[in-house]
Amino acid sequence: MVTTRLPSAGFSITIRIAVTADASSIGRLTTCVGEAGAIVTALDVVDSDPTRVLVDLTCDTADSSHADQVVKQLEAQDGVDVRKVSDRTFLLHLGGKIEVTSKVALRNRDELSRAYTPGVARVCMAIAENPADARRLTIKRNTVAVVSDGSAVLGLGNIGPAAAMPVMEGKAALFKRFGGVDAWPVVLDTQDTDEIVKIVKAIAPAYGGINLEDIAAPRCFEIEARLREQLDIPVFHDDQHGTAICVLAALTNALRVVGKRLEDVRVVVSGAGAAGTAIMKLLLRQGVGDIIAYDRKGALHRGLADMSETWQWLAEHTNKSNYSGDLPGAIVGADVFIGVSAPNLLTGDDIARMAEKSIVFALANPDPEVDPREARQYAAVVATGRSDQPNQINNVLAFPGVFRGMLDVAATEFTEEMALAAARAIADVVGEDKLNPTVIVPSVFDPKVTPAVAAAIRAAVRGPVAAAHNTAALPEAELDEAPKETF
Image (cartoon, rainbow, N blue to C red; front, top):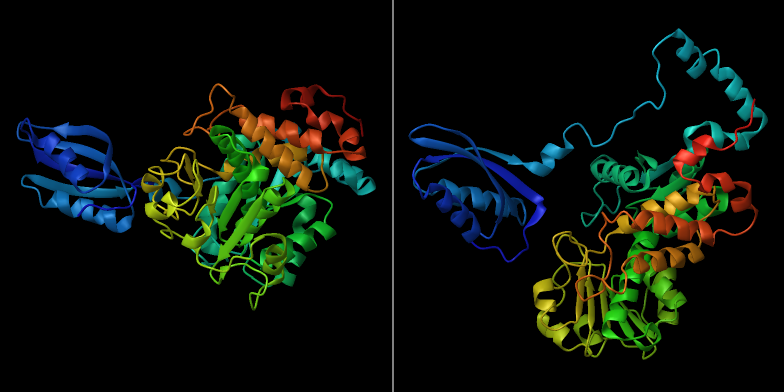
């Protein structure tokens, strides 16, 4: 059985196998795995004797059922004894992915007396007298809450708060790795809008920012809006704003590659939920030529029945021709397709009907709206959300730097100007000498990305907030040397 889906490191398995010790045995294993549609990424000899060789074969598969099929095909080979199969993703998650570590030593009574009682009482009273000092004297200065109700986790849907934890842990790990930001999962056992707003408001004093994650639309829009009104720290919904920033950055460079201008192009967006809505609003803010939004009820157009308030707004501000047909019809002659919806909605033949030098961003995960291999036969630039394909559009390009910059200047809110500045910064990290159809965004591991985004955010903050916290924009080493107040 050969799968038509793309193998991924997310479904990587290691198979411990004993095989007969002959010259062709190892080759037969790799051939079998390849014929099953998987990709061998490593093969290590664990032990051997005169008659048998024990190996660990690691391969990427497309999904769990495909992994099972690969194992079965190996088991069917003569002289092959499958001893153990390990799912490498589950192994990575054993015991969770993050932990709390102390920044101070507690080696003796003297240090304990200053970190805790009685010395800590003086610091508590200083904050009680001047609450603004909490940012200087506690973790608030560098800490973000990653808040989810588990109602829209990845492409898995409403799976609840406990099942959302692995994603939120991963988010926290990414904050630390790429932005030096301490983040912590806050998963809520309620999907009531009023309750979520109340809880987040109550815990906000401990944090310098709130990152909303995997909360279903349209509830997420109201939660974000109300929290922004009630809190004096930034509230950022990554599924909306992080995605929109990265898409705008990628599209900026894709248009440079094909020699088109944003104001001249027609864009079709599949998916008018949180991500799609934010993408379209940011593109409109940048002056895009036209957009057709498509969702489960069809193309959003004036006169469509039973639209939410958000969809009504989109219908009034997009789709100049008031198109009301299906998705394949919408992309005929379109310059850009952006998918943030569901897999396998389009074929290569559909992409062939787009405008010359078309751009395709098929971002549904793990399976895109159109097979990228087919799309590349017709589109000039193709991007996905997958790490194993060129041009991965990944929110980690944005949110670590966005929060790094906002925390640096103690920003009280996230603004559209910050989003535009972050998108420009990400796009510009890819220099003119590097830009081509397979490189329109930088690697998530490019060390220039987070500093560039953080600097752009700091520059976008205006007024007394930035001036009052000018030392916060210094690197950590310089912060340690900055003048301190004495209490």
